[in-house]
Amino acid sequence: MQIRKNVLLKNYSGYKIGGPADFFCEPKSKKELLTALKFSINKNIPIYVLGGGFNVLISDSGFRGLVIKPKINSLVIKNNNIIVGAGVDLGRAIRASLKSGLIGLEEFSGIPGTIGGALYMNIHYYQALLSNFVEWIECVDDKLNLYTVNAKNKNWKYEFSQIQANKLIVIRACFKLKKVGSEEKWKTIGKSDEIIRTRFYKYPKEPSAGSVFQNIDTKKFYGAPAISAAHYIDRLGMKGTRIGGAEISGRHANMIINRGGATAKDVIALASLIKKRVRSKFGIEFKPEVQFVGFKKNPF
Image 1 (cartoon, rainbow, N blue to C red):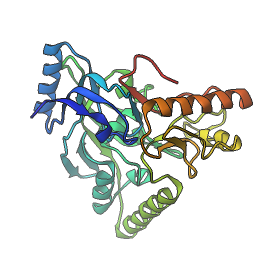
Image 2: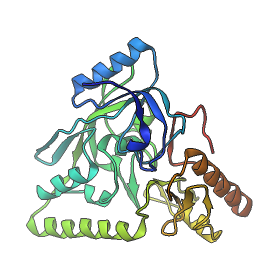
Image 3: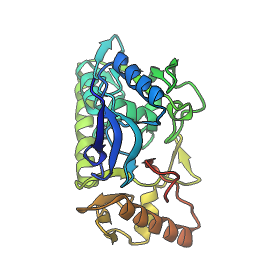
């Protein structure tokens, strides 16, 4: 495994924004991941683990340390379980499970990113949370301690996971799904295709990191807020508002897109404007859904 220097992170970002990382590597196995962690310990430098580059905003100055982008792409199906490496594309895992007649993960069809990143964020789609299907997760911390965790824990909730809570790094994970017959299998494949089509028309095609802010409301269903953050931004008529190269998407009000040449500074200014107007109009304090890379503190 090669550990490269001064790698431009915008090439690994959904926003296509971000400066260089001092060091960067893509471990393809558990052994290589542990080697990368040993490198960071010996150098006494911080690490950041990057998944598909979505749900993150990377500083224009980059990251002073080691960025690890796992490429552990193993995928095995055993009985009702699918066991996948942290670097496996979420869509690949969904297609493989459906091909084997295992249903459950189809709710997340069309969501970009890797298994590791999806578990870190505990991704959701309406009432479905990824943690609902977790059997176990093999993890390691930045001190090389190995753990096996599950989702039967209070630290798994909307937009939050036990992985986040304990600052763990996913190596691989096992999802327990439901085995069905041929008829229900093909119905579910059709449902997955329809979810992907819906997302295709609902979400922007321009570079974006996904939703900027967490949903927030007192009414809840299945652990997720009932009214989206986009609802409040829509009511303010802010779609199309632009600062520099960053613009609020005309398709989805809770997504900021890169119209070309956008910087992290542009995104921060636009997100801060949204927060200010929502607070003034509705008395609501938005919380960011995106994770921040290379910043000393939450920039908005």
